[in-house]
Length: 272
Image (cartoon, rainbow, N blue to C red; front, side, top):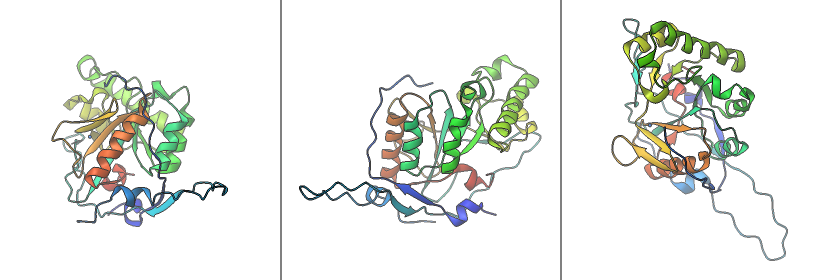
């Protein structure tokens, strides 16, 4: 059955505001009328008459479109979690995922709220332990915390055996439950590399799938493994970095140009 959030839809806020670009840093994814920039952001602001008091801007409310999932998450077979790189769907939707948690700024919270973007937050314990409560603001907006290991060892597949991989994954599962009250259902391997041993560890830890990507917002621009624009069902990778605003601006431009709605991946997969 489709998830409660997808079926019911949510009322989100969106403000007609531009993003201020940060200095880019180094890098380390039923037919419905598509959104246009005006439809997503709202009507342009009318200038006040000379001498008139300036009104306080208010958010433009819109109804988030809802979609009945036309894709079913593959089951765990032979003890191996499935690997999801892109969602095959006919719906005009895209999925935003944000990794790590290194840089924590109020600006990132504000921007996600203004653009009404739910996201899957693949967080790493060692990068969020200094301020785990920071991510509660994203939870309140409709995002969910998922598993990106305790240590973020990008060589874990090559350097570690099954048990050490499992311990690193389980450690983040336990930490997420402790801090956020929910057991993650999706796993993203550091660096994106995976093996059958890792897929086995992911399944053993109680997670439903390994999630990678084919598109990412990085250093203030979009990078695509396939094509040169966003496609329905793309899973987009971002990071909590100093260039968060610039990356989100690049994603937003690509999302609006493609006429896609940002939908929470967990809702569409039924694992929220």
